[in-house]
Length: 308
Ligand code: PDD
Image (tube, rainbow, N blue to C red; front, top):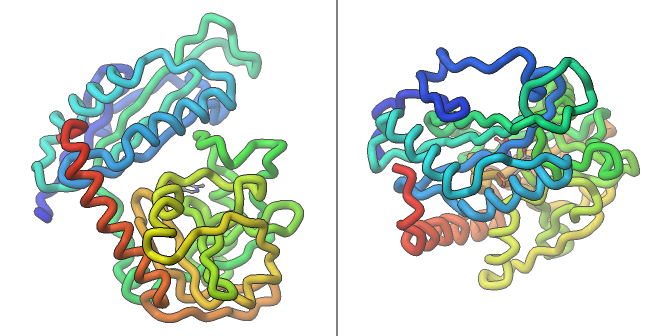
């Protein structure tokens, strides 16, 4: 993969500029209240991975917050292509595409006026470069006092532009000497990390917290659920109590930008660390390999979606 720099560009309601010149109104409800939803796509050879799954999730997030997205999918895909073209992305370079939709700008009032039209921002930039040790060794998670928003309050299934809960979680984790948080829900069930889903191997089974525990329905996680049976690691979505982490022998996290990232240790509520194999155990490695293969397959089968 070429390492030539991508020109970071933004597209605000159709106006494309370098990222640092992009402007939104201070009356935008996304800025004022976090009244917005978003998606992060990652491309491989120019193809946005699991493109339609991201659009489906965006539409679901918008539905859950009673927001209407003014532009149809095809128009947004074209806007992403225009933004990527302005970023002069080389064909062989993978990019990060963030698509943010806010409820729009209007009166300074919590009650949205009926005539608001949604606004959008697209950001095109390089894929985040995670610390290579997170792959060669693994990242460290800490169970935090900060709990994940309960499903009944601000459901984690809404990918909203308000990440304060996650920011508080990861800030506490860093203070505890970890790289990221492992948040519990208010009933003490394991949920997820600040921006990734979490998986464990317990009693020979690959498990991950279920939707009712309060997690984002990760698109990478869905891909792993589909692959699981093929590779002899069927995924069990279940409720997992914090105390059960001591039975874990492997752990990893997933997201569009992290892919499959091993976890080397989890700091338990007691302050003790539970350690896992460096670079991921056997199941983690098998899942990571299968995920990479499924990405290549997707890119081969969906070349028509190319952004670059
Ligand atoms: N984050 N959980 C949370 C809270 C997330 O923000 C994300 C994604 C995930 C994983 O979802 P997916 O597999 O669809 O990427 C789980 C993105 C990458 C972000 O905000 O940068």
